[in-house]
Structures are given as structure tokens and as C-alpha cells.
Length: 106
Length: 117
Image 1 (tube, each protein chain N blue to C red):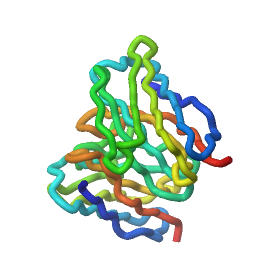
Image 2: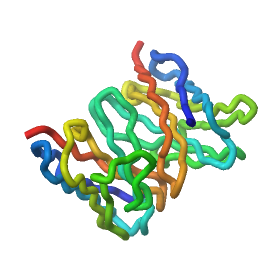
Image 3: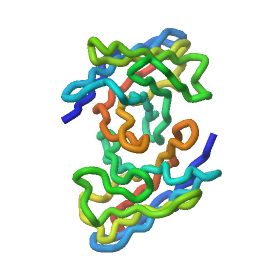
Image 4: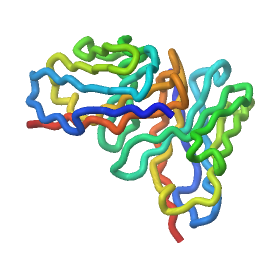
């Protein structure tokens, strides 16, 4: 089973700042990596698929990069609605999720 | 717009079988994989397994001995059965579609299932 490790666990930032979230895989997942945003009481929402492609309706401030074992989700300028928990997910092997990164207001 | 809706009991007794259904509307159930994912209160996401519209299944190895996922294309529904539940199976259960490049592009709202006597 491929393990996804997300860092940091919590990111404390202010609106307007840049957020950089990391996801590292225990072995290569090629580009089969997705990112999700989850707000309290809601289902996760797909942000990025195939490592770097924005899902439909996702604002351009969200971008993804990486391949193989190291991936990054960047939010260029945090909006108030972006404070949430973010998960990465791979499907190269049995589908697994990372443990999540909480982006909180500083 | 594809919509998914989970349904089933919110309370299950220990050692019994948890049964949930997911109804798909606004789109075809054909040509996709359909997943079940769960999230214990305050914790992260765990994939349970998925089924192709033709009936092929794959399960999380950690749950495989207790999980059965089935599909009824005529009702545009797929279902989850999890046997011999314990308190550790208490979670919000989500159904979702595996879309482009195996990402989960549509999700149900989730349903909380509590295991308690």
C-alpha cells in the first residue's frame, strides 16, 4: 500500500498570503495524484486531478505540481473561504489518502 | 449535474452488519467506478472500496474480509455492506464517483453511522 504523507499538519496564515502544502508518496504514483478541500460538515471537493489539472469551477489561485513521489498544492493568495483541511489522494495502487493539512487563520 | 445520495440506518449494533445505499442521479452509472469512503469523527479519510458498473470490485485490504459492494444499474444504485461492526466503524460514510484519472469528482453529502448498543 502506498502511504501519502502530508506536511505540515497545520498551516497558520493570514488572508492574502501564499499557502504551500506538500504531499509525499512512499513510492512513485506517476501523476495519479489528486487534491481535495474539505470544510466542516461538508464532503470533500475535488480541486486538482492528475497532479496539476484544476477541476471544473476551481479558481486559478489553486495550482498543483509534482510527479513521482513529491507533490505540492499552492494557493497563491488565500481567500477567507480557503481556510479548510486539504487532502491528497493517489490511485496508482490501492486508493489512499494523505492525513490532511489544516489551513487555519493566523 | 451528477448527484449522489447515501441512505441507510444511522445506528447499528455491535457485531451486526452496516448496510448503506447510494443513489446516482443526473448522469449515467455506466462506464465509471463508484467508491465508498469513510471518515471517523475528527479524523481523516479512508477508502473502503469500489465497484465498476459491470460489477468488478476492489476493496481496501484492511477491510476486505468484512466488505461487500454491489451495484444495481437498473436502479442507478450501488450499495455497501460491512459486517461484524465495532465502535471503530463509527464514521461518516461517503459515496463518490471515480472520474477523470481516478479522481473522486462527485461526492454524496455523507451519512453518519454510529455503532452502539
